Length: 241
Image (cartoon, rainbow, N blue to C red; front, side, top):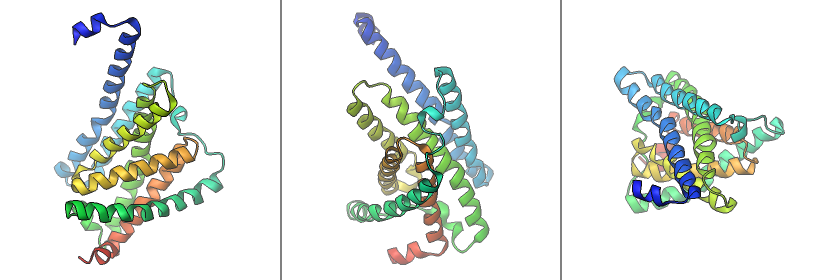
């Protein structure tokens, strides 16, 4: 590797350096998430999992500041119209549920399994646990995951490429796969379907002209409806379990 670096042109060296720094920065931001994922098992308190995402956002904030950038630059800025963004997010969350149906069927036929949602079983019929998970979802998933994945990771990867189509196509695919992989606790079916959800949230991000508020609200509403379905046991009725 050192020989390749030494024989490379100055431009290639700069490219290698930029890529290495990008990978290191992404790793630094993502590492706190699985650490936070272990905490609920150690403490017996699901809420402690929030700390991992909070740590990731904090690290990302420091890195953005070091780059001379801000969260606003990657999409966390006031939408042009709040009144239009809310119904847009509601519509997109409904669309996401509809779009996901054929993929759920395809994954079931392929893997003979559905996402493992055992982590959320305590929600069923329990208002207190439902409220707890909704609060965790809106902080870690809606705000945290969108800021980290669609905001920081995707834009960091995109900055490595020069051609617009290549940069965003690569960034979208890589980010969505990483996003899906971080949901491995739901099994392979969950990883695949979450990757699809990640692609959908990215579409929302771009439809809103790279505004994170649209994907944050869509993500939050999408997860909220999912938890309500579990709370009311509708998911089991649909799957005939």
